[in-house]
Image 1 (cartoon, one colour):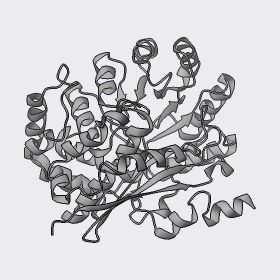
Image 2 (cartoon, rainbow, N blue to C red; image 1 turned 90 degrees about the horizontal axis):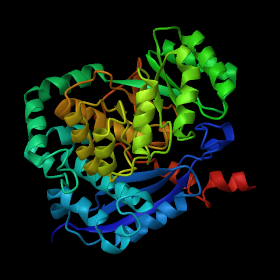
Image 3 (tube, rainbow, N blue to C red; image 1 turned 90 degrees about the vertical axis):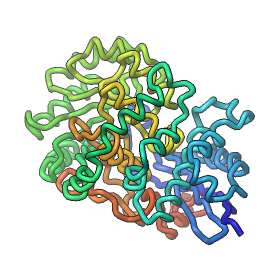
Image 4 (cartoon, rainbow, N blue to C red; image 1 turned 60 degrees about the vertical axis):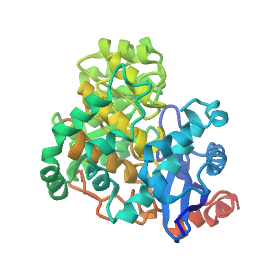
Length: 434
């Protein structure tokens, strides 16, 4: 009997990071890092794991969205799904009644990401490969078959995508070996949370440099005088040779972003991240023109590949920050990496959160091996929160991600961690309520 998917399980898992203001920024002052945690089970006893990252109460909406999509998945033959993952992704994002809620954005699209990522995790486990290596072993033709070009063809055609992948194909083995020996560059946001004291900011900034990081990031956007002071302290702490990125988390209007960055400019910020509404493509372009040579980075809240296409077409960003679970998971992110390569824009993925470092490292490493072929000006965000809860946590050495070697997407939580943090019945939340 053919192996089929028999269940799509989801759990509301939350971590009370708001207690220490870990993750705090101008728009999210007290986040609880959370995930709609998904397990896809098959009739053979195999399983794959994924999640959609949220910051608290919205997780119940995300869990409901996953459950609404599960009916499209249960009963499908596993070989059919893994044989055409592009079609599987479109099955989830194209259901007419659920698509109405987007289309291809918001809670439903993120729920699709959680399921798609769980299926890629299942695929990696079946093949005995980490997903970055699984992707990098696919032919150019197999990779472009993942992409829905319907809305992209004015910016990227199938033939152009094939050409990008074929140009990178001869050096794949050499770059995979380099990745295994050297790892992939990282930067850290750990020192820069908005709720941290000046003393903690300075201490953690110096510790990051001592640990080998050559770039750190500070949250900004609540008070300009505070930001100038904190930026000055950070620059004094790390010296002139370390890049300091800043992140407004959408706090500003367009002119406000320009004015604010002029005050921070004397301290040499490397990029300004999410300076305004993530939906405002023309606003990002205006900020970019005005604040150059400071770079503009965005993408963690960009809904889908079409918005990334327009950001690139409009010259609205210098750094593309894809997210593992905002767009429709691994499959759509392959399209986004190809778009970035077409426009020559470096990808520096958004991470941190719950499981985002674990998942997105695979995408950046695949990009290096099989798409862009470059690590120049490319770094993966790193935050030192919650990795101990994963069975295959990220590994950082001297400011670089070490390439995962375990099969899958690195998204599986330890069973006891998932149970203890399940909301509201887990032991952690029962103690907090008491």
